[in-house]
Length: 210
Figure 1 (tube, rainbow, N blue to C red):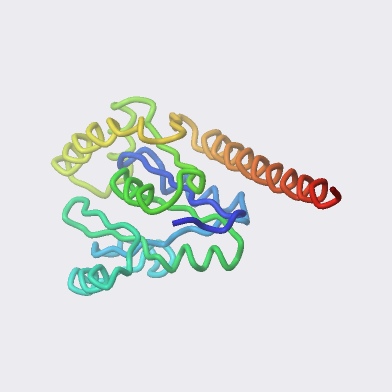
Figure 2 (cartoon, rainbow, N blue to C red):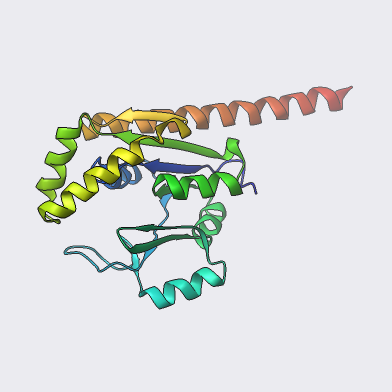
């Protein structure tokens, strides 16, 4: 599949606690030409989360029903919870001539790469500065008990092995610095797209004159 020439599928992945969700939220504030793909999930809504803004919260039965109807581009299971990105998010972004941003893991990223052209995708893998810093961030969130934190750390080490599947790999030491690096890379791709389109139009005029 391909998307509109002025749109890109932007993927940001990271192990739990490395900061991808915070980076995504900051990025869409900085770049008005990006829509966030809001995922569906079967997990319970956390404190301060808003249905339809952070996720669409549904039960597992409804999730499986939507999956059977090919409602999702990609789905993943993490810590016994289901997650999925709907096709309609891409359709909406195409109509608005905007990029679409996916906050997903490496498994979801693989599925998107299978369905769309390489040139349509800009993908980032976010790493923590160190394992100890990752653990500190997970503890600071205050969401999980000690056993769950250790499980997340173990899973994170496995996730980090997939960094080489991504075009860009960034170490998230300071969140504002990292989001600015992501923004510059996206703007670079936009510039290349614009130059190609400009050259194409110029060449067409030259050829038509002859």
